[in-house]
Length: 215
Image (cartoon, rainbow, N blue to C red; front, side):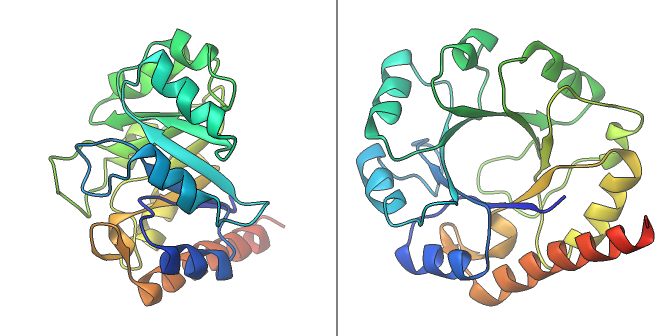
């Protein structure tokens, strides 16, 4: 597990910091209800500043087909993350790489993943109230489960919670990567460089130690 995605990007300086730290993907939220919302054109302009080799992810919730097509036409984004109650057909019709996110509170939420064969990745997040942060779901729900696609762990991940979350998740199921957002912020959409650096280093160090333990 080496994949690190930082979501909720709203500022050029935060993109530069994340790029310097060697993250793998950056997310731009096109959901008006989010405190990290960017209009599609503004998000595309900001995403254009991201170097090649780093995935640029447009995060959408229950978009219409024309809205998805508008994102595809920008030619900027590599991936769309669907964070609502989209049908499997919505992902099948998408021309970009896809992430299907699931808000998890019970086993039934994880079972929904089996319906989304078209997804490139799954993302398992906590179910939060608006503006709530630092909340993780019960990783023991992953126990004994395997998934058809690699999954990304999200929800309440930051410098203070990452190592415990990774050890818990790795005992239950092996995630492909992590998604960082509110846990590395000073305010919605305003990343803290120190928190971000510590979080990324924690993931990389954990990866290294895990490889050593399994030799």
